[in-house]
Image (tube, rainbow, N blue to C red; front, side, top):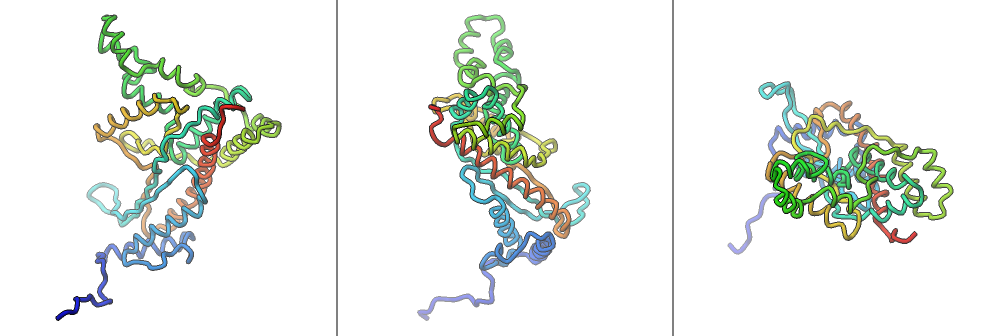
Length: 332
């Protein structure tokens, strides 16, 4: 009577529906056929939920492809679901793979980019544009140009400055216009916080041959290393992700690149932007998603090929952000 009750070891601690287990087993077989699976990726004690085991294998594969990261924190998820031609006609079970990035916080890159621009005109803006381009192909990041787009959405009715908003709210009342301008985020604030080349998107950039020449002749090893990282990214050229079919605003940015430690404008705009988007409810956070049939090993093989190039570019982007945000770039 003083013994504690015990459960027979043959009774599982977690109950998984038989249909879900079958689908998970089919997906596990597809992973093996896709060539991504090996014994090193298997968890030491697989559980009864096969889809969780598959996700563990997937996460292990991604970590292995990415290598060590200093800044970016990607995540992946897998969900089983039914797919069909329309809502009423199911074709079969599919695995929905989603990926995105957790925020690494705020990092200052302005001193490094201004140092590069002083070293060679258009070098700083070339590095910034390369960072922006490959961030949107991997894990998007808030940059000065993106922050100004957010300000346009929140304050300026989609315009490039506040004049339209003042006209709509105040009309010809000069005193009211001045009062409203003094209390809002204005284009002048951006112009005083960022150099014009950090906000302009249509500027002529340096070519790869010029970048290579600058790197070879630079006496500052930091500058040469940054240029080498940019050239590495340009050589990868991963395919871009199609955002056209996604509904709502994207808010799953993986970090914020402020210009300097005194840059209060960036955080002010982003706080207002994210509050506006969260209140609307019309947004999404994942950077990418793709449904793959649980027995379609060819589609899964194609996705792994895509993700190999994605992982290489993500690692290169991580290195570039770390180089720009670490150390003292204020004195060359």
